[in-house]
Length: 413
Image 1: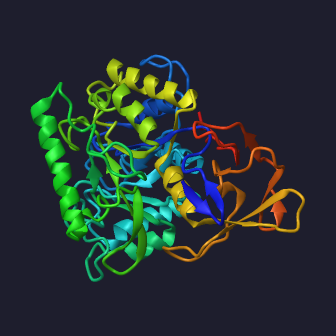
Image 2: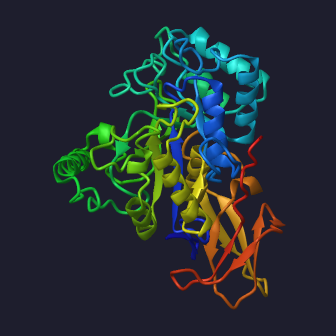
Image 3: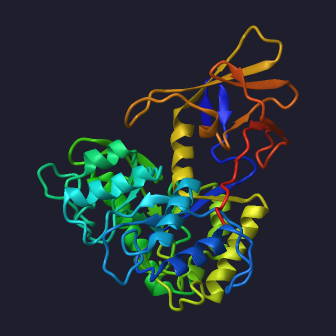
């Protein structure tokens, strides 16, 4: 738990015990129909060729300059671009997955950002793609997008556009971040050889982290994100993704492999540990266009839906999860001493990366404070009482709490 001036902040929004984002790269998605079918199945309960939808909250990625056989912003038609605009504005496309394999100059990036801005589309999350030239990662992803003087340098444009969260290829096998790392759970008797190898690799990452190896800086504290810098000095939050497949982080990261990852054992362990997970996958790598998610993957997503609807795991988009963690770390409280009730003022510490910004109500979705059960309490923000505060019964810790509701995104269907 996090303490905020004498009060405890609940690390996960009430009543959930874990938090997860299905963070899917769109690599090899064949067309806009497959893209939309998949998004509709994930985010609604509507009937589809794959059965009733999972009813979750799941985002997706987009890129621009790609080979003609892959869905991307420039490769689709006007209807496809209109779909992309609507999904970005609703929050369901929340990540730039580089500017694409064929984006080799600063002009490619500038054109993409200009088009997004003209359609009132904002994105805060950057995810490196394969070895695209515009990547920010220097080692695994081999990009030059943040190297001043490079033909594809664009970090200034992209960060000024609003990107603040960056993924540069780091993936862990450990179930649950934002809690102490535990290697237990990686080894499985069903697959002893491959899981033992995966465990050894993860132990090696942690050893290198303790020795100060920058490539594994995120693995050491086992946190989802931490402040970092691009090579041009621009401050960003770098984040870590997770793939708990027993055979390693590059296995099972497709639509067909999802069932081997979203297992009941993984989900129950995430709940037990009270952890957070940004799940690494590629749901656009499909075997059948008419049924993008195979039956076993759909069963796994329905299982995740049960954990969500039973109040065990909050499932949300990558941007919302990262933003929640950033706000949680900045949030502080001040208790008014001259009030007969418990009046709690919420305020933020200075921003770690980038310029400071005031807190607004929409920054605080899910924020939960443990408070004395019997005493009346009020939450204040910028001197104004918040009207949608919920008082919660004691949770698994035996403590009562106040929370602000997690307001779901509305899928533009």
